[in-house]
Structures are given as C-alpha cells and as structure tokens.
Image 1 (tube, rainbow, N blue to C red):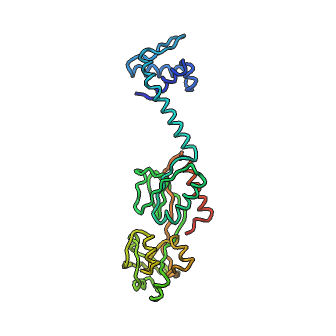
Image 2: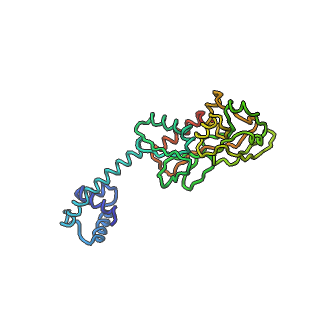
Length: 296
C-alpha cells in the first residue's frame, strides 16, 4: 500500500473536495486526482464518486475512511510530538564515557547542563569496555585516544599526560628513582591497558619500561585508592590526581621525564539535522573546553 496516497485520500475526505485538498497539500488538483485513481486501482475498488459538481464516498470508501482516519490522525499527532521534542531542549540524551573520565570530567559537564536545561534527561553509560554506540543508540560518546568510526564525527577536547604517582609515606621507605628502570625497585600498581610505560627525557632520550605488577586492575579509582594506601606507585592520567597532587597527598615520580599524552574526544553521529538537545550539549561542552577546561 502506498501510504502517501492513503494520506492524500484522507485529506480529500476531510477537506470535502479535490480542489480544497490540493490547496491544503500544495499540489496540483490534476496530480491529486491521478494519485487517487492510482490508489483505487491498487486497492481494487472505488473509494469516491466524483464528477464536475459532486464528490462523495462510496460505501467501501466510507468504511475505509472510518477505519483508517483515526490511525492517521494519531500518526500525525505523534509526528508533531516528535518534531516538537527534536526542535526543543527536552527529551533524553544517551551518553557514554570510560569510568574514570566520566567521574572526573564528564559528569560535571552533564550536571551543569541539566541544571541549565531541566527538561533534558540523561542516560549515562560508564564503562571501560567499548560500548557499541549504534546498538545502544548512543547520542554522544567520550573516548580517550584516537577513535575512528564511520558516520561519526570526532571532536578533540583536551590532552592529558600520563604520570607516575605514589604516596609520600611509601616513598619515605624507598629511594627516589632517577631513571625509569629504577621503578622496578618499587611495588607497582598496573592498569591492564597500560602494559608498557613510555618515557622521554628533555634531551630526547626515550625509554620503555615494562612494569611488574604488585597489583593489577582495570579500574583507575581502585588503583588510585591502592596508591593512597601506600601499596605501590602507578601510572595514571593527570586529571585523575590533580587534587591529590595539589594537596600533597600524592607526589609525582620522575618529574623530569615526560610520558605520552592522550587526547580526549567527543563523538556524535554525522547528521545534517541533530536534535536541538544534542546540538546544545555539544556546543555547551565545546564552550567549556574553549573557556579553559581543556587542560588536564
């Protein structure tokens, strides 16, 4: 069944004539007449009696209209509701991020955006696994490192450096390392996705260190708690330990050696017409980053 022709038929009945319906639909009357005839041929029975002066429904047409008109009206109403939501700052946004990044960076943006836009609801997926963005109908994803996905736009937000941290109390029992290889003399807490620690010195000298784990985990907050307990030193992103470094609760090891930097990206589907709520959140985050929150 051609549902556009069904829509045309219902509008012809509602408007009372082909001429009035054609004017409402903004198409030529001759075109509307041909479409109506083609629809009748497809169905196999006449829907309307029409002449130069009179227009009326056949018995089949009346039954057809009575049965389907409420459904079409409901569809129009639902369509208007969806269009209203897509063009307003309301409705749901699905966001995903790695756990630590979500806690230390993304949640602050989400909370502030929701305070400014109370009609927006957020469904948040925090996971260190790569959430399937398409299957889970994700609107916006935050990722660390280079990520390429067809039909998705990736916007770089900020760079964060990795560094080695430890508790001062633990380091009172060990000598301060001067070279990356000397880290092997310390108990180490290792994140599973960081099997190698790469260092570069100011003179251009580069070294790769393979840590032997005293504790191994896939969750940064667990690793950070272990570091604070004095159980070992760990390689973590700077944004995770900014507060602890500032307060002296943790200290940085090998400060003269720099480590790799990772870029945080915001990803969203490549669409010409993103819902207003999604576009508003993207613009909000970009404004935050350009306003000084892009350093970590």
